[in-house]
Amino acid sequence: MIEVQNLTKKFNGKTVLDDISFEVKEGEIFGFLGPNGAGKTTTLRIILGLLKPTSGNALVFGQNLGENEGLRNKVGVLLENDGAYEQLSAHENLDYYAQLYGVSDSLDIVQRGRSKQNE
Ligand SMILES: Nc1ncnc2c1ncn2[C@@H]1O[C@H](COP(=O)(O)OP(=O)(O)OP(=O)(O)O)[C@@H](O)[C@H]1O
Ligand SMILES: [Mg+2]
Image 1 (cartoon, helix red, strand yellow):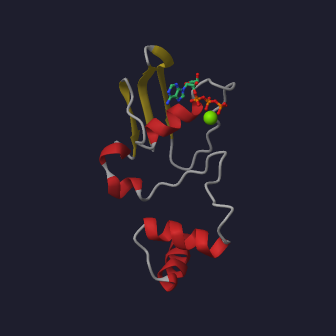
Image 2 (cartoon, protein in one colour; image 1 turned 90 degrees about the vertical axis):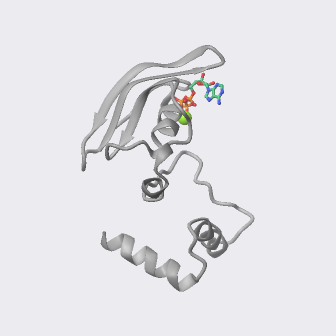
């Protein structure tokens, strides 16, 4: 389901990821461990298509998420920072993120949540 192939990433000439490869199969629970600054978030950002690798590939369902917006919209990630705005209520947070996904009606939001649960 996730294939990371010979991934290398340099920031301003500094090598942060040095030729890493791994594979995660469907249904597998995968632990990705490393000390602070090892490159875990950088790897994840490349997998999500938010950052381009210097070389190598990161594929989800055989595709590059950076080039496939439809697939990217189906992928969720929860990083150490939850991304919720503390100034907004829970409902306002849901409305805000729903709008980013083009869901403007709150009934749609509830239905979308239910259909996700049934997937
Ligand atoms: N946009 C950037 N520009 C320059 N250097 C960066 C950038 N993003 C990350 N780095 C550097 O790349 C290295 C890996 O960072 P990364 O955030 O991927 O590590 P991490 O394993 O997620 O660490 P942590 O456990 O602290 O979350 C660090 O040295 C970091 O300073
Ligand atoms: Mg990190």
